[in-house]
Length: 257
Image (cartoon, rainbow, N blue to C red; front, side, top):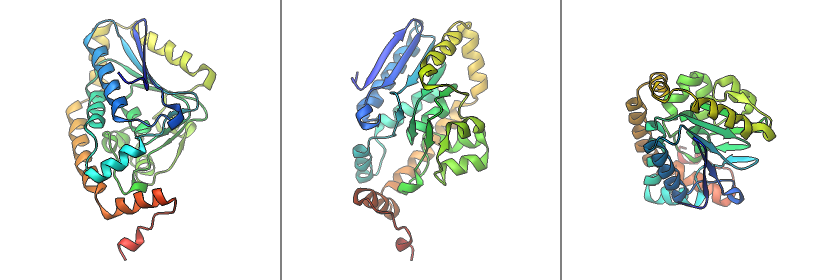
């Protein structure tokens, strides 16, 4: 597994930690594959009762690795490792808890929609800048976010690209609790241990009922991926990526003038 993803089993709790702080925990294909394999292993055995996803102090994840993202733009499709990981989040039957400290950008935010519990430090920031890049939301967020936070807040996050503070994410229902950074992982460990003490079969059944139909989320994820691929090779995306590389504002008006 990738050294950029730390895997630690603390009793019945499996911790997955993004270990690429020098790149703000931007996620690469090997990292996605490592996390998918770790989730597969956790699901297959009885030793793991719950899974925690965490980052580094001050940064949860800046989203997809920009180098790979530019490659997706050339190929016109998301890498298979990305979609496999996102679908594994949907099909996972064991509880998933997130510890967010700092930046949670792009998939760093949308993966949280698949977590059962999310705890964040006061300085955390949540943002999904898909439209900035001429793209569309992914990870099933276009279905889950409106259900969770209502149409207006979901539209503000996914389409306007607004940054959500920890307090705003709490009010929107994305975050369960704001915890001081120096207490965050201890708090998450306490909650995960409480989940691990639940009767496992009853917990699995209750979680399935609460989460609803996984097939609908997977179907929406496929729709998003198809549109995402079309957008990747659009003139708008080309302008957005060129503006990013040239460190200038994108000018979408010139494309439709």
